[in-house]
Image (cartoon, rainbow, N blue to C red; front, top):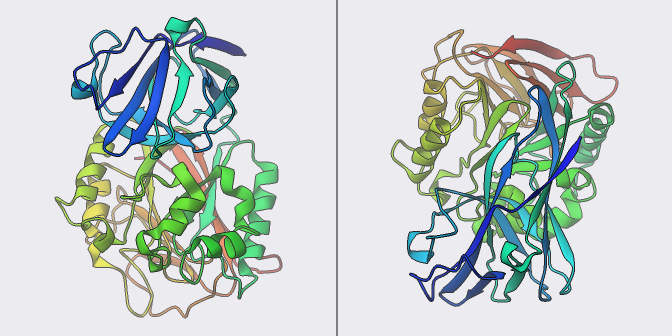
Length: 428
């Protein structure tokens, strides 16, 4: 099933003319020239998708009016607006980037996948922005050739679930472990209709440079780049600002000044955090990231929530866990989150649900540590409280099936390894 929706409202806002309302223009402008910026807003009203049907793809199409070599971004909109009265001075903030505006010649129709944002019937607003001084113009609805949104939907196969699979501490040109775990993901992908790959940080050794990503990560896990939503590790920040990470993954990695973002998947809300606390203004209560996390949790009503970042709060490593992240864990616990996934320790560990204080609690968070992506394996220390499974004799990946209202997990090892850890649970 497929339907085409024409843009219902669109406009440009211009910092050089902050009070000017440009909703009647035939052109949508996107530019960044020094301190002067132009951004465009577009809106679609999606209706007619039957109850019980699931959006499988949503594609934004626009007529590009001039040649552009530099890409821009399609982002969510962090507030309300209208074509009739929105100017730069009262425009809402730019939200999470969800897709890239490709360059190209004038007169071409550009396409952007916005499936992650279009969940069914409703109103969907997008910002068109750029970080470059090479402007891009698109035809607005006033031109008669405005943006359109093609939405495809069908019945959801609830029995299959949506797959979320991945690990951390992944790729090194000095190890073939990442090739082994990439092969495991490939086997899972071949059986999955809907799959997203996560990374839990320390993705490209030794320093997360763009060269490390291209030469060490790219040949193995890079084959899943289009479906990967990465988290940052400490290695990525061995390159100033983790610029290699953001250059490689682009908008899929979130805002380069933050490295934390969220998305929806299979009826779940997924949150990616940045546990390199000193790089983002801290992780403690009241820090920008902790405040963003609480606001994000308040803004979504999905029954099931999962978060992942690099450094674990709980660990059976000899050095223990990282207490810096306790306030992030606490915010998730207070919001009834189900799962936290971490890495950093180069082994696999699963904890029973627990509180931020480490007390067993059926309504608590189940933490997985999956630092088995391929770099190397670590020694495990004495079992921490509530640690239910530990393994360090093989690389492997965590495979989750996410259903509306519940999940299944399996730690998938290299062929010939006898260890298994599987289970299932309902959401709180």
